[in-house]
Length: 344
Ligand SMILES: *[C@@H]1O[C@H](CO)[C@@H](O)[C@H](O)[C@H]1NC(C)=O
Ligand SMILES: *[C@@H]1O[C@H](CO)[C@@H](O)[C@H](O)[C@H]1NC(C)=O
Ligand SMILES: *[C@@H]1O[C@H](CO)[C@@H](O)[C@H](O)[C@H]1NC(C)=O
Ligand SMILES: *[C@@H]1O[C@H](CO)[C@@H](O)[C@H](O)[C@H]1NC(C)=O
Ligand SMILES: *[C@@H]1O[C@H](CO)[C@@H](O)[C@H](O)[C@H]1NC(C)=O
Ligand SMILES: *[C@@H]1O[C@H](CO)[C@@H](O)[C@H](O)[C@H]1NC(C)=O
Ligand SMILES: *[C@@H]1O[C@H](CO)[C@@H](O)[C@H](O)[C@H]1NC(C)=O
Ligand SMILES: *[C@@H]1O[C@H](CO)[C@@H](O)[C@H](O)[C@H]1NC(C)=O
Image 1 (cartoon, protein in one colour):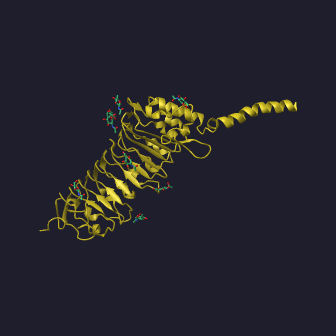
Image 2 (tube, helix red, strand yellow):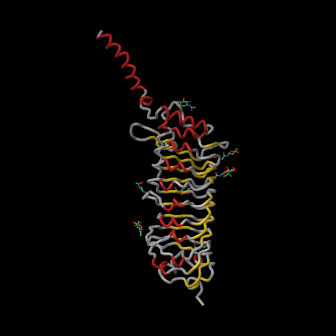
Image 3 (spheres, protein in one colour):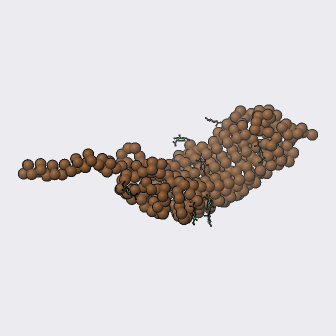
């Protein structure tokens, strides 16, 4: 009895031992079968682009092109990052639905693919660990799903240079750790939601909504918005942009160029951290405030093409600090004094 069980153990152990020695690659495969299956489906859904030729069913997905597919370093191993860019897509194709079976994905990058089309599917909320979502320079269209706010781990979202339309998702400000929102260059329309004045995240650093079709008045609630980088330029926004400023705000760069904003700049107080201020091509009126001369970090300033009037305050960096020059103040109603011509 004993010897026969020893024999059977030997019969079982020996091949396993040999297998372990002879093909360590197979036995140490980190890729889980269901993730490999999802990835191979993604490849198929994209029409088997040649740039995914390293995606081979007989090898470990964690050893495929290490830029496209990255796995976690610690057990249990999982696909943590997927980066598909510049793929040769011979015909228009939607975002591959099998991406949303990679449930442990933390970073998803889809970019520089003109033939990537269709909507951002609501199944994106399957990805409950996603912190970085970059979909840019594609033809992905339709609205930005408001359900993105269900992915509580989101930290940075870049959806620039696509064909996205519809309204701004009102729930994004509820994301607890969002830091970067970058939606430049789409066809997003309608007003900025009131909720954008009360981001829950203590870590919001950048809000870029430029080159869209946003319209309506700047909501008064944006008095409560404080970000390092704010870019609302080249939309159709109206109303009182002064709520975006305030002595208590930490904003370093603010770009409101190319809108229809209309407010008295004389009443604006600037935060000390402002380094770049671009207000050109609006309908801003009033006298430039003395406070502009007290901004120690100011390096860029452009208030041209507005309806400003009166003497330019003298001092600080408003005169003789390249590249701030006459063109920074040009084409206003009646601004005068250096670097423009003397007041009459
Ligand atoms: C996958 O890899 C195996 C082993 O390296 C190779 O024999 C096979 O041709 C590859 N298949 C494809 C479709 O590239
Ligand atoms: C995109 O698809 C069209 C067919 O609809 C094709 O003619 C074109 O070459 C593709 N573009 C790229 C960059 O592969
Ligand atoms: C969108 O597709 C058009 C052709 O249909 C193409 O000219 C354009 O470059 C694409 N846009 C992007 C951002 O890929
Ligand atoms: C977002 O993507 C664009 C490319 O369309 C790039 O220029 C920009 O720097 C990116 N922004 C962030 C914050 O990642
Ligand atoms: C952009 O989206 C609109 C629908 O919102 C669609 O009609 C148009 O064809 C899309 N453009 C491209 C280049 O895909
Ligand atoms: C806050 O953002 C910074 C960088 O902007 C990042 O290093 C840090 O991890 C973030 N903190 C949280 C809690 O997300
Ligand atoms: C200015 O920026 C620094 C970091 O660069 C920050 O610590 C500080 O709080 C900011 N100042 C104000 C007034 O918010
Ligand atoms: C200010 O903006 C105007 C109009 O776009 C431009 O011509 C000028 O060069 C800009 N000047 C500076 C210093 O940025």
